[in-house]
Structure formats: C-alpha cells, structure tokens
Image 1 (tube, helix red, strand yellow):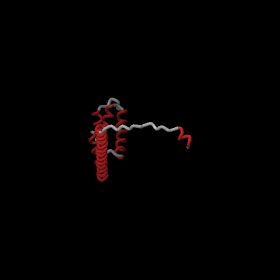
Image 2: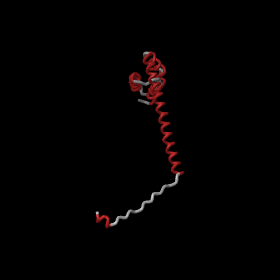
Image 3: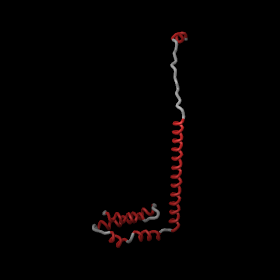
Image 4: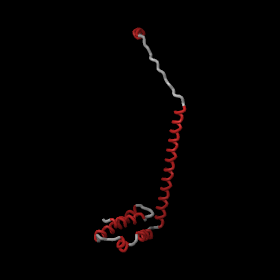
Length: 134
C-alpha cells in the first residue's frame, strides 16, 4: 500500500469522534476496500481516492447517520467519563508526587540545620578471670 492510501486511511481514522469496537470493524472493511483499490491502481492519487470513495468527512458523516443515536450518546458519555477519571487520577498523581518531594526537601533542610550527632563507642574489656570463674 502506498503513502497516499495510508494517508487517506489515517485521515479517515482520525475523524472518528469515538473509536470503539464497531468503529474498528467499520474501518477494517473500509481499509480492505481502499487497499484492494490501491493494489489494482498503483499510480493512484489522493484526488482519485476521494473521487472513488468520497471525502473522509463524508464517509464518517454517513457512518454516523447510520448509527443508533442512543448508542452514540452512550459511547460519548462513556468517553467523557473516562476522560474525567483519567484527569482525576493525573491530578492525584501530581499532588502525591508534590507532597513526597516537599517532605523530602523538608527532611533535607532539617538535616542541614541540625547539629551532627556523634556516638562514641568505648571498647568493652573482659577480664580473663571472670570468664574462667563462670
């Protein structure tokens, strides 16, 4: 498949407002048709693809007209819900990381400002007589 056909299919894929299982199936059938057409016409141009199949916007508009409006609304709501959940998780991660690094910085400042603590260890001597007597 040449670059022009890939560009046409990429333009088509990017125009889907929601990309789910049904959309993948539809895009797969369109991809097969475009691929077969490109193989039978090796010197194809983008304009000839548009002339034969139509503009990508028209293909998507026809597909959306065929869809049930309730399923389209449900998919849009689901996509919106996932976006909200992803945003909340992202903000939560940013807050947690900020709190962690703030606490690390506070510990660093505390270690700089505090006096060093020295622990002196004195050797313990054991008498040989006390060991023998036991």
